[in-house]
Image (cartoon, rainbow, N blue to C red; front, top):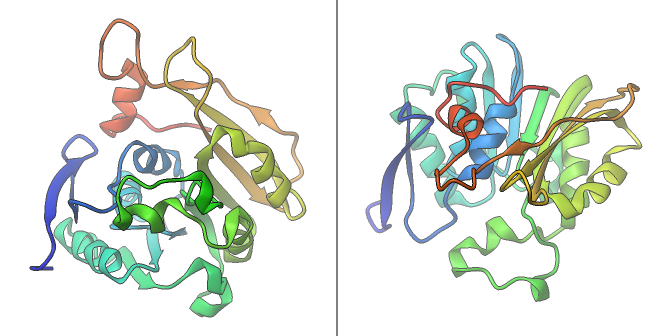
Length: 247
């Protein structure tokens, strides 16, 4: 890693140290919210496809003692940093990183099904719709196989009765539901709005494989107040690891 510009940041109220590339895709709000949405129990196994340097994975592992986490990342440099970050946070016994590609399918990993899958898929399918801020970020922003490749992977990766949690753009909600619905149900949807009087920009979708319960639309999480504060009190508590994003 000596030839890379790497910064070391602290997330989850300083509890997690995260080394990440200065010029590449950097873990941020979406990773923090995904980690806060994980409610796995001790002894359960959780998979994160597209884990990057481990921003969500390590925050979730810190929040959930006793839970086993597996990350999958196709970028070899990001996967190496994720492994390094697990060791940096003394989480190597519960957090493992495997280099692999969602496009190849879950079976290519040779792993048994998990109790839960959580993921933040790339937000865009069409290169013509996106000009990435930096070439090093294009892999994290662009889904080569589209959203369908990610939902198919998640459905294969989780056992019956297990959960799938996805954070994505709010305008892709219908697509997410349509892709998951043939084999999953019991949807619970949490909108994420920048302000109380603004439309949601993100959604976190929770589904249960083979679930049959009616869809539930939960109250939105509002990230910012109009009074000039950086985050709302609820969002600040979640980001600092003092509260979970409950279901």
